[in-house]
Image 1 (cartoon, protein in one colour):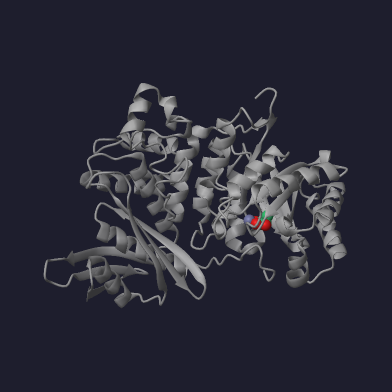
Image 2: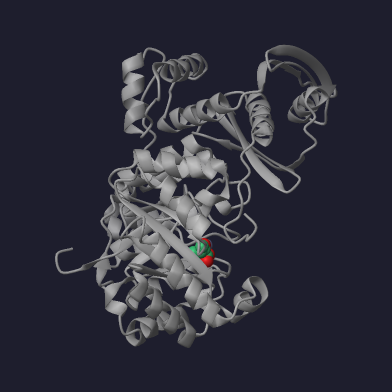
Length: 516
Ligand code: KIV
Ligand code: ZN
């Protein structure tokens, strides 16, 4: 990379990624993901939107306290109260960035902000100056830049650079742009803005037309030196540019890109699994880089070619992005120290001996049912512990389900609610339905079930089933997760987890909402 520029990777999984309906994360989950991003050597981690809720503030602060090798960023509208809140949340960070934004497209300025263009410039300049009171590292985004007038973008961007912005991020907020035109826009801005050399140009592309990665790469070819992206392409609506695709495209095509990232790409698959596990958003098998089939050769001709010389059909090496064969890491006889060490290697640090003991007890329980324990099993186990310990009003004590040909499945269960045991029975269309109905008999949280999905964590019939349940009530969407070698029990755990999360107080506001 000696004679190449650095391409800065700005990960917004914890902020824009969290805006995917149902992808909300707890503070501890955000810290776990932030650690994985830091280990991957991501340059900037956007940890959240501190003004959005006390929970988001706490999460940004916790990430700022934990991460030392990456810059930690907080989002703020171009408003004093947002910027002050972000500055406060980022105080413990070794390296902090404030990212402030205001809309610049004619439709957003007229219909949403109801402000004249001159007022928008004034507010942006004021916001950047205020953010500079907290840190020298200030990023400015003209929201909906992809539909803004280039002349106006040149004016506002020149003004915010003079005010102290060090990164200018050009978002295609609604995913409207196409590669050639978006790349040309970036090239034009860099050429026309007189003080462009005093800031790094960045892009933030949404995937509404499936073009987020292509648009980002086109921008890089035209001078952008920061890309905003998310693990697995998570994000608002159709998502953001997928980090793993941007990074591997640039790394694989060093023959054409004038820059490279400093990422440790071998951490990619691990981070992808962690995010999928925590958010409950499965990765499609044919997803580039991190899908289960991304390196699988099915056709005989391909297999033959790869066996003779892998370059015949492979442009990247699976191990370079962190794929390795399922490795049996632990078993029934593994001790507490081995467990703690392996967990540390997976990026999991236990906050207390009590937390370690609880996770270890669950590991032993699992090892009794399942002979070989893989990394994926361990990650699922930690997700379950971290989601349960925070908010456990309702706990599963016992569940018995009878399922027989020709008979309606019947479930009887015991729950512990705020320390008091309650029992219920129900029949249902299937064993999972019967179990959910029995839970509803005791705690009907009146939410609508939006999604129920089961995935096997590893292969084989003794694999744990990992269940995601998504509930919606009054516009609030939450995900619950559960895992067990018995998928009916995993389902009941996931449903109870979602019910507990629905009852939690933290309500996040959307960054584009003006009424926080
Ligand atoms: O998509 C967008 O415009 C954003 C901004 C806050 C950068 O997420
Ligand atoms: Zn966005």
